Structure formats: C-alpha cells, structure tokens
Length: 138
Length: 78
Image (cartoon, chains in turn blue, purple):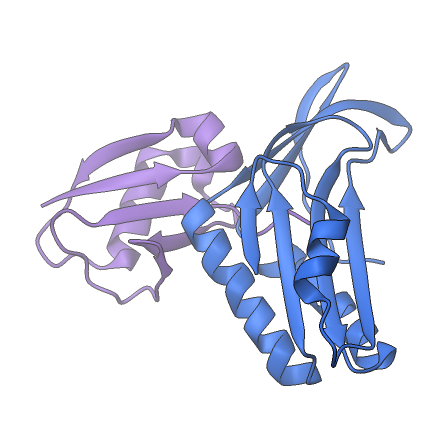
C-alpha cells in the first residue's frame, strides 16, 4: 500500500494491513518532524510533493523491495502539508517470515524514498524558511 | 505549439506555479531546458529534473501540443 496524504496515519492500522498468518516480523520506520536543526528551533515543516510522480515512485520502490528482499508485503505512507515538530512525516514498513529480511527491506526503502521520491521539505524557523537538501544518513 | 510548464518546491517559489510557453513543433526536452534556463537565469547551474505528463523522460524526447512539463528539484523528503 502506498499513500501520499495530508492526513496523519496510524501504526496500528498499518500493522493490521501487513499482519497475516505467514508473517513472523513487521519492521517499521517512522520519520517525525525534528524540532531543531543545527542548533536552531524549527517551528514548522512544510512538506510538498509532486503527487502523481511521488506515488508512482513509492510504488516502484515498494515493488523493488518485494523482489529484492523476498519480503511478504510492504507499505509506504508519506504526509504532505504543514506539520509541527514531533508530528509524523513518513511511515515505511516491511513484513516478512523473519526479522532479518524485514529490517533490510525497511532500511533500504527509506533510503530509496529519500533519494528518489519527488517530495521536498521546507523548515520554518524564526529567521524564515529553508528547503532541506536531504542526504541519506542513518 | 503550447506546452504547460509546472514548477515545484523552491523553483515554484522563484518562478511561480506554472506558465504556458510556446515551442516549435517537435521540440525536444533538451530544447525546452535550454529555453527555461535562458528565461529563468537563476535555474542555470542548478540541479533539477524534468517529467512530461508525469513520467521522467530523457533529453531527446519530443514534446507534443498540450503536454505538461514538470520541473522539480532532486528528492528531499523522508
């Protein structure tokens, strides 16, 4: 399941989508708005997407993860709009027979989302706004 | 032919949400990029991507009347 949405999401709902009898592990990555960057308070984050292309790219990443890691299922939900510190931004989840594949797939998917999905973040601080130039790091 | 060009993120803030530009029939993406950089000089030297009708394309792709070209920065979400 792929979703680019203004609405918040529920980890429990995501778990219920992935929970099946053959699944032994579900690994989640939850990205939240960080309230500080380089010592400066971030008051708000604006997340913008080129929605059609972002949804297509997220689905491509999901399908690649299924093939590459042999996992059972995966989902990616990315929020857009104006978000406050500590609010949810992105949820990536992978379900598999055992945890090793699920961990690897989840880690790979969030790196690919950051590298490939046409989604951008603008942090609003007391000094104004700045677009985040993302680099993939843990 | 007329082509609608849409902008995203910091590029949208600099140029605006969208504009309609006139190109010769059969113009390629390369020619469109050249014209965009000539018109909006702050795009020169910047790293941006192009999609046509929602799909990423190579520079030799020819455009047709009514196509929608999207201009956007590299990914920065997650």
